[in-house]
Image 1 (cartoon, rainbow, N blue to C red):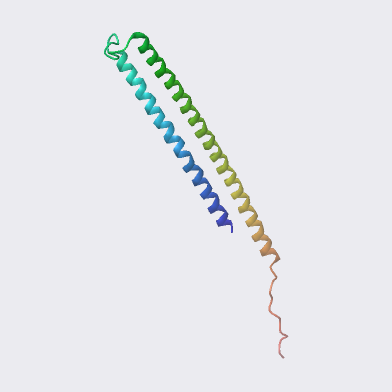
Image 2 (image 1 turned 30 degrees about the vertical axis):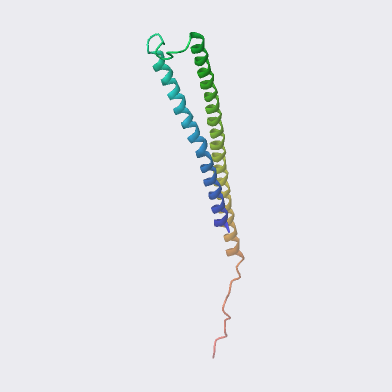
Length: 135
């Protein structure tokens, strides 16, 4: 019975760890995308006066595109931070759950020892009847 309870607890912990993986993967993917955007912006910025980066656009259009990219990058950063925060909450819950499981495990072991001691103490002692000596 105790093994079944531990088995179910282990399964719940495994499910919680698996649930945290998509958030982590999302955060990493978002970081890669942000890095790519920043790299692309830096490459375009280092192309000289910027004419090669936006050959057929006017200065106001370039500024608008730059502002849109900056806003998009900020939005992605906010989303990434939210994903990281959610992952941290899940990890904290998992740590707390593992600590609680360990505590309950120790309590069950202690109670099992006490129960075994009580069973041994209350076990009837069987003695063989003593027959009177023959003369």
